Length: 281
Image (cartoon, rainbow, N blue to C red; front, side):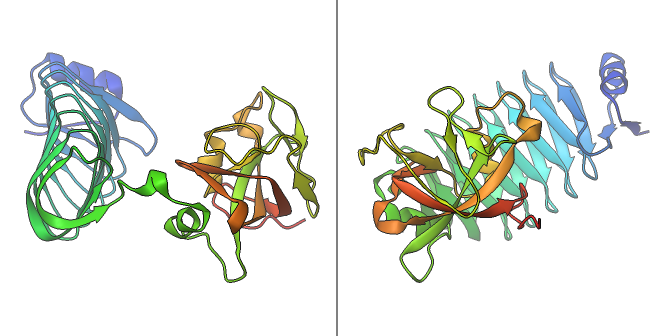
């Protein structure tokens, strides 16, 4: 008989009782940890599971469920629907992946195998992917990855991109030699809290007084390809109050810095939501 759990306390009690058929069906946004040698028979709906460690096993990850931070010698298998498994490291294994499922950020000596259908895999470090179906998109982010099968999408040269290439990679380039990038700022439309404060008034042009085109952080105005990514670099006192600005920069002056970029100046277009939608006054 299956035991359906929705909270961490219920999961811990079922694991302590050595239940053989534990099903996780928790509300979206509630994360349940799995460790030891606990065996999970199913993860349903929008459930979120992680971290998963030790020698735990999580099976039957379906619907829009998410399993994150899989490490040690843990195993995740039978992944389908639009489920996501992310942050796989250590000697963990993810296997039997199908439908439109995604396996992201596989690193270390982790292994992904038996991937089919329209699933997607992202590999880093010295990870291994084997027994990959003919139409599976396999994204390589490291030259040390080992892959058998799949459709290879090589990202290993991204760090050498120039401005226009970087913008096109992030689908940012427009027709007149500019790109729209994003900045997370304080409620007062300022950024650079740990350095020199810079104001970003909407409708005006902002210039960096210390511009240096070398590929290194600092000495310029910094931006991200999406508002959500911009939030990672927000340095204000309260991230819940951050505001997001769409800014137009000249492609020829844009300097890529991995997942962000810098430029000597920008035109502040308008405010947007964290999803990139324009905020009306």
